Image 1 (cartoon, rainbow, N blue to C red):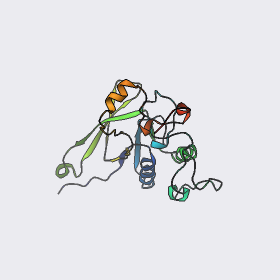
Image 2: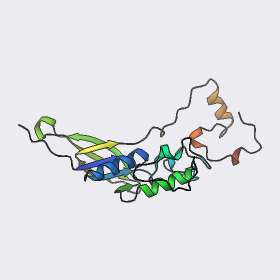
Image 3: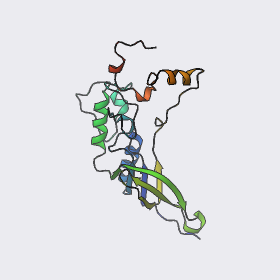
Image 4: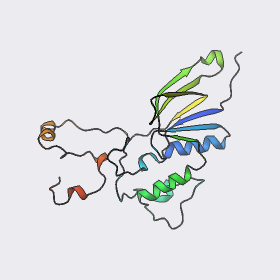
Length: 196
């Protein structure tokens, strides 16, 4: 009979809200957790940047407020400061998530490019997983094997632009006149212009 191997090492891909929450829970079970985050800080979509060259832009924009009360966005083991408004601004959520990430082994600037199952369930009592990641500043890929992997990469990464008749011609004729909501940062560039 095959020996069942106990899970000890877990990779979490993504350090957004879900990735941070699952990492903390796994750590509470005394598992070794490594989080891979392609951005330079935790928080996922809550990372706001005005830098147009940001490698992985998020849909966050200046002065955004949450659309949920803070109590519905609170981790059980990490309370909001009592002075926080009912609907916190995005920069407060970002700070909250940064604080929550303290103590988690997060590898920032690491984009996962491959995930492969190793072995056979019947032979080794459980498959191991190989994570292949690349540091944003290096060409060399790094590989590491884990007993389990959690994929917490979120849903707001890729944009969808509908195929409207004439849209391509419009964008050719009027460059930079069409903006996806994910790219919106603040209203300044639209002052004095007609918007619809």
